[in-house]
Image (cartoon, rainbow, N blue to C red; front, side):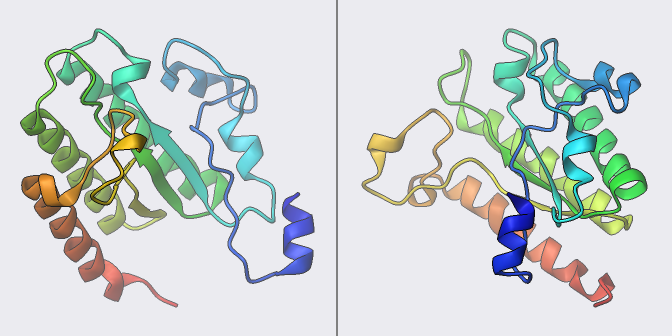
Length: 185
């Protein structure tokens, strides 16, 4: 499919949109996965030459359900770092944390927990991007406009109702933009 899309538009950037689970191509990396497998292989799928950049997702509250916020953050650090290393050293492609969030449906959830989680993830993304290599940025799951309550899946953020979260997102955007001068085009 990637070859087909590129045959139609070779300037169209393509990515796979997968969670990032490791498979048999690098068996030692399987230890980074959460405690289950879903049959994908981050490395082999992203080695397809027509795929322009790698993506990962992270839903630590689902993948590590019942574990503490600290345990989830330790997993998240390892998850992001291992994929950043592999994107840099094996794939030689940019990496985007394409989906992440903290569900409001989790027991004990509050906005401060989500804001702390997001701030920590954003600091790590900034640090990896600043260190060079391949970290290209991140996208949260999901921003919604006022009136889109029907799409609420626990991860929805309506910026008007969440000014502290809006501030965290804005700060990250400014920080990542400030790194643009380091990128050589």
